[in-house]
Amino acid sequence: QLMLVGGEIDVHNSFERIFTVFIQIVGMIAGSTLVSFLSAKMVEWQMAMRDNKKSRRMLRQFLRENNVMRFAVRIQQQVVERQTQMHRLVEDEVPALRLLSNSLLQELRYEMYRPTFSQHPLFRVWMRTDRKMVLRLCNESLDVVMHRAQDHVFHAGYRAEDMYFLVTGTLSYTQDSDFFNCEVITEQVDSNHWLCEAALWVEWTHVGKAEAETDCQVLRVSAEGVVRALEGHRFVREITVDYCRQ
Image (cartoon, rainbow, N blue to C red; front, side, top):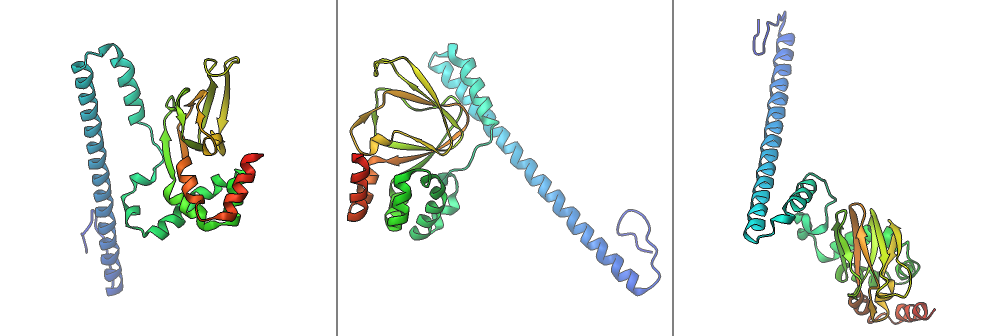
């Protein structure tokens, strides 16, 4: 009789004895692995909870020291709410990506942003005409920003230096009557749409504000970066000039 686990197991020959021992060893390994995994997850959860409590404690101290306690409830409620929400990872939050070569990182960014760019007629022409130029654009002129609900993407009255592609989520754009002689107009912007294209071609000032209605991933394209990317690509530059004049 073997009693390596709870209960007695009767074996009648060598084969059954070897098979029983093998199954028990596999069971012990699987059990210990499961216990280790659950223990690690528990420790990870406890550390996250400790960090959250520490950050909230420091926030309360900051508010108290700066005598802004009348905002304390609203601020702490939003912090607690956002700490419990999951959000999409952005490139800066993945340290392993720093190990990639520059060329491979360019290819990765191109594949990530290609579906978004393909929604815009000019960017779609760029991709079909000069892939190298778009690779340079992806490497030097793009920035991915995560916005939580109620975050402002930009405000009226500020100089527009970027074009924005909404990758995921929903924004609301409200035109400011102080900058535009019209009634206040609010439009909903859904994913795969863009804002402030004019910032790429002219000196532009925002005449409205954009606010996240839900958690949003926004792809920000630098106007200066587009100009740099077009340098040395005469044919693409001529296509772009014709597009701007239309």
